[in-house]
Image (cartoon, rainbow, N blue to C red; front, side, top):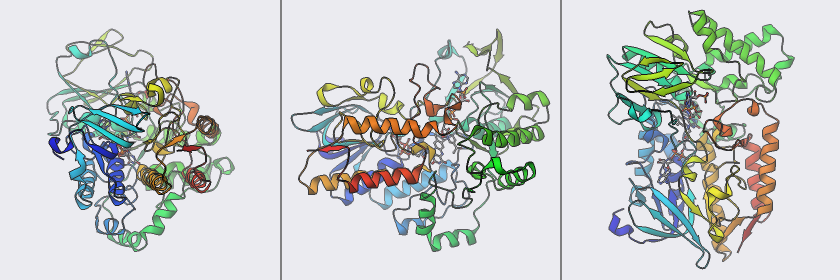
Length: 536
Ligand code: FAD
Ligand code: N01
């Protein structure tokens, strides 16, 4: 859309973000005949897959499942080439969607939404953006992403570093040549696990700074077998329905076994874990049904992975440092290709910063415990201000001028992860309090977009103008999310699920485990006349 065409535009819906969520929301808004505009900070569509171009970036949910199911022709015509698609293939898929559903005319790129203010007298939202054009809309949909606000730690001296710095989530489009360079990677989460083998293969020397050892299982990525693809496509709808019925909204290949690890003897455990290790991927944690519910059960998986690390990493000291003493899956399990084996390379060194943190960065390198590790490049694989970060960076004001930052000062409060009391007609896609990051995100995005579209359609059909979560329903829902999380192992470590990776962020478990149960509640709420929502 040209700036002139968008000037002071009156809209039905402003959508913030043009990743999977923003684009699908825009498509469904078009189908409903709504005037909608998606506003995106990036210079292109794609969200996560536009920004995260670091070497080795791919999905960890199999491509046949990590894709939209809303359109039969789309899922039949698109050809994934590998079990886990690369960043560039996923970005091509998203661009194909933007073209196929004629979305581009209503996407405004290179523009940041700075504030959204609800005007009680008109019942409309005023949206201010970096292009200086004011939009006014009945509805605002935050498709801002759970993992879109980069977290670059505020380490003393960071800006005085003399070499190049990169964040995995803001990777240069032209790529980075590390040949002949001494490179530091700070962090050992999923982004580091995927990029470290590539950086190590190119750099002269790689030094990895590890604060917490991570759990990783092999991806065993491979080209997709055309026979398997044909079998899935023959009844894709049923296959997706099975996936949606699993707690993480995927698992068509290797569903969870409904057996407790605590009932298995050592030989059975080893056999099961060997089988899952050979298959590869996140299905490892589905070998038994209580690995994410019971710490003792979880310890069986932990022992197994530690034994694998000891086999894969030749130097016993490095293997010990790489062996976590935490709960498997309590931070997101990493899926790797040659991560552990990379530490056998002579040009790779691991520095433990668990007890002596990175002290500062000087012009020449990274200082730990008084020792300067001289490097030419620093890669911050330090993750994101997850789930709330992107929303927190927008000045959002609801009824009575109340800011979202104030409303969420002790942690995010939502009803169903879809709406926030005091913020009428504002929706969040995969917001805190919904399964979101614990699932195949595309399945969660589809379910949220469809729920929001139905809510708007029903509102219009009933001659109503606003929908808003009630305080009581929201308080009850937050209590429910906490109660469900308390029955899992997720509280057992300092993860970004809890906001623990960002200094000063309140520690609240943000996603809700259990996709099928959640969907059922969303459907019941609608069947019960939008129970817990106030509609006027
Ligand atoms: P995003 O893709 O994050 O898009 C949000 C967009 O909103 C961004 O482009 C951002 O620029 C824009 N935005 C935010 N704030 C503003 C603002 N104020 N103004 C304008 N624009 C704004 N999930 C899985 O289920 N499976 C996977 O295998 C998987 N792999 C991942 C790999 C990586 C490297 C990362 C970082 C995440 C991965 N995820 C995965 C999670 C992934 O984020 C989701 O699957 C999905 O892509 C999210 O889509 P989205 O549209 O909700 O958000
Ligand atoms: O970020 P992370 P990510 N000093 O937060 C460390 C998805 N994803 O970008 O654990 C030293 O997981 C931090 O240490 P600690 C996926 O959902 C998927 O890797 O906090 N270290 C940690 O090691 C994932 O979970 C894929 O002690 C510091 C690392 O940086 C999410 O995105 C690929 C530090 C950050 O790890 C985020 O992953 C990529 C400091 N000051 C991403 N600050 C797939 O495989 C932070 N760290 C599909």
